[in-house]
Length: 313
Ligand SMILES: NC(=O)c1ccc[n+]([C@@H]2O[C@H](COP(=O)([O-])OP(=O)(O)OC[C@H]3O[C@@H](n4cnc5c(N)ncnc54)[C@H](OP(=O)(O)O)[C@@H]3O)[C@@H](O)[C@H]2O)c1
Image 1 (cartoon, rainbow, N blue to C red):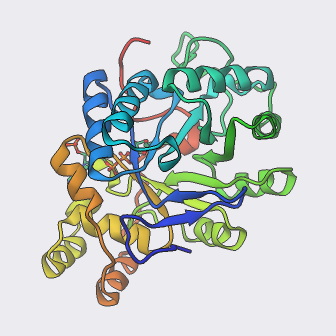
Image 2 (cartoon, rainbow, N blue to C red; image 1 turned 135 degrees about the horizontal axis):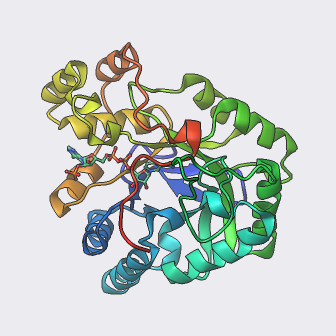
Image 3 (cartoon, rainbow, N blue to C red; image 1 turned 90 degrees about the vertical axis):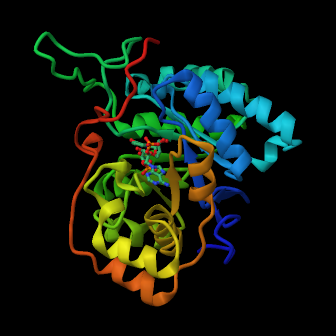
């Protein structure tokens, strides 16, 4: 599935059109606006070419600013980068999909998007409040719209030509199957939490069979310690192959055929996380045998994100 043995430039083919997605992606879930700009520039300078954004991260404007400046400074063409953003839960009603998409494009200063994802399968009450709750603090869901209704509106965006591929995030295999079977345009990418403590083998196998790119978020376990970064198997392999634990975890993700998103927040970490290469088989196999199972982000169960910056809109 991975086209190149060079992990830094590896690209995975997409099932829609003739496009490819870089295996290594930079995630922009960063709380601080100024830090978003510097981290995005540092990632571009380190070599990252996939930038994963979201309406919900409330920093598309800053990412757009950093990308525009970085592309100009590095003489990098728009076609050389791959930009993803996501439709938030409060915009699932079909008539809200295109306006949300166009607003993201404008904030990102782009005239087309490489990939648009439905951020979670949960529709929240439509409106400007991204986190609608009742007086007891419970999320207000919108029962009047199905995921398939929203998917049809996403398909229309592809037809109109400013969105090259569409996909889903925080979805289970069962949920993906339902959309896959009914879709006119099949999902190109599925973005879910995955790391050695949550390898999601059934979902990965289904994606392999159908040519859907499995895009792993939290490949470093969101940096939570203790967690995969401090796992003794990972530490021992890192020492043996003379890489850092982060580099081992990221290499494992690419080697098993997934694309990934990581969020280094300094130039040094951007270079570290980009500088990965294939693991020898006797280093790769023990990671597959890790028995610990742990989901770190509950968003897949509720649609309410666990890691969203608390900044004003
Ligand atoms: N679809 C969804 O619902 C969803 C949910 C979450 C995330 N995402 C996407 O996935 C992206 C990736 O986020 P993530 O949390 O999954 O990223 P991650 O790279 O797994 O974890 C980021 C954390 O790891 C630490 N870190 C980064 N590089 C490191 C290194 N070389 N050594 C040690 N620690 C390191 C960072 O520490 P510092 O804080 O010290 O820099 C940060 O705390 C997000 O930006 C977002 O685009 C999507």
